[in-house]
Image (cartoon, rainbow, N blue to C red; front, top):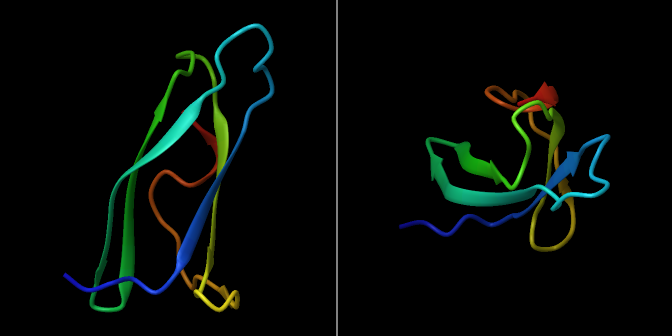
Length: 80
């Protein structure tokens, strides 16, 4: 298995976390294939009606940012 030379940070933003457990994100699979990075994740401890803004921030180990040319899947605004 190849090592993936980057650091990933997921950002979840929700408007109503008061009085409940805060939603958690868990990366279930992280892989690289043919120059593409695949990220599988789960959002737990959330309410069914909640939606999230999901952003992917990636940097090399030296701290330099990685700019993604394309993102697809459940990323962006209003992810449920």
